[in-house]
Amino acid sequence: MEPKADVELITQEMLLKIPYRWSTGEYIGEFLQELRDSGRIYANKCPNCGRFRCPPWPVCGVCHTRMEERGKWVEVGPKGTVIGFSVVEQSFLVPTTGDMLEVPFSVGIILLDGAPVTLQHRLQETNPDKIKAGLRVEAVFKPKEQRQENIFDILYFRTI
Amino acid sequence: MAQKVAIVGVGQTRHTSRRPDVNDGELISEAVNAALADAQLAIKDIDTVVSGNMDFFEGHYLNDAMLVDYTGACGKAGFKMNTGGTVGTMTFISGCYCVASGLSDTCLVIGWEKHDEGPTTSCISTIADPSVDRPFTVGALLGMALICGEYMNRTGCKLEHAAMVRAQASENAFRNPNAHLRKRYSVEDVLKARIVLYPLNLLMVCPTSVGACAIVLASEAKAKKITKKPVWVKDHITVHGEYNGNHYHNQFNLPGFPRTTTQMVAGKKLLQRNHITKPLKEIQVFEMYDPCAFVQMSWLEDFGICGKGEGWKMVEKGVTAREGAFPVCPSGGVLCTNSIGDSGTVRVAEAVLQIRGDAGEHQVTRDVKTALVSGFGGAFWTDLLLLSRTPD
Picture 1 (cartoon, rainbow over the protein chains, first blue to last red):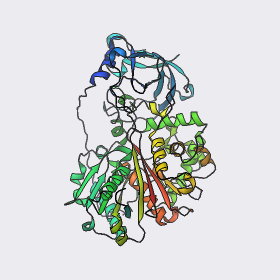
Picture 2: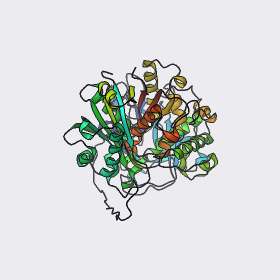
Picture 3: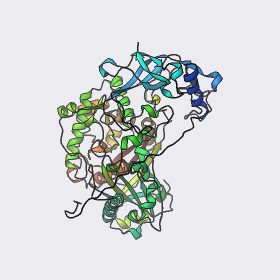
Picture 4: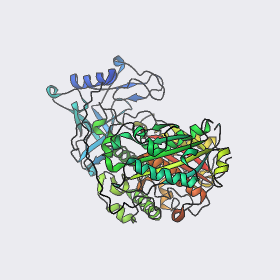
């Protein structure tokens, strides 16, 4: 239907600004604690199918089995190999902060040394011509006193 | 299925970027009235109403409560679906459950979205684990960009092939009066569009549209009284994938652990249990949920329609064109029209039009007896449906 010519089209603005507080849970909490305190990246294994997850995950989705606990975690990285990437050129509203995304923003799927497991994180390199599958990268951590127990305690992965 | 399920009516709004002339309910009414008219039924003939959209996109929770007057659910059974990209197909499948169980003789299925009311990509970003994944999530777009790069690396597909898919989609949408982006583009035009996120440019990703689509389902006994051209739901399957940690680890071949997608699982099971061994012959059209230009090619392979590495070659040879030997998305697909809550219901409705021979200008040249429909979304989840002109 085409709108009627004599109808005034009225819209109303609404801004949702709602605070939340999430629990990271046992495994992710311990993963973030290690990033902050030791600057180490950990992965864990499913005792049933043998697949790894990073960050360590409590339950294997495929087997529905409890994955290995902290004492058995495997240190991975800080070096790894990019197997997938994108460079975001258009900015979008970031729902967690309400700010616009600073672009270019480069994201890599990094196959970490030490186990067949990937971590998604930011790449320092933002020129898509200088990134390709197979690129070797390394995690760069925030200075210890500035760490905030979140995923950006790893600032990004730089090309090596 | 316990009781056979027939589609006896379909109706959709035109799709566009903005509809400031209607509110959410008025938009829904257009599709509901069109579907009831197509079935030649009144709302009193409907037992159950199932609706679906993503609450967060329009920013009001439990919207089926607010919109009950428009959906026609007042005094009837029903519920609401909210499953991301699959919401349209999942709403339809939920309607099928109602009829197949024998608890409903008729069911009205409604998918809708009014993307002109909120920031879609930001809302989608909230599906990712907030502590470790969300900071890197750019709606559904980032995952698309990553798997497109993976497909190019693995199979030798080039950007030009994605541009071919988009140019072909534009030809189809040009013929479809309900499609959103109906401008015709050449392969060169597509390649010139600005990059949104590498390797995808603006024309290689789906738009955000406004629209609604409703479908009327009926039991076998009812269907034969309602219409001379029922379309039968032969089978459907839903496959949830493991939460990828939004690392998309299942989307890549890792040492010792090969790539495993929900499309592979759904395609293998559905084709096998329906004894389809030559899908390119036994299925005549595929309305695929194709949110970006590469996935038409990669998912044809994953669903088992063609062999590994053959998807982009099918496009190159024109096989997937409207007049080709295996048309994919003759409606123009999600690439040209994407009001997420109805993107899946539109896929079903368009397949119904093709089977009935009612698709008009975008009718395929093959005689369509059997159609495949897919939905995609959530944590890379898949719905896959088989529709047929005959009940058996």
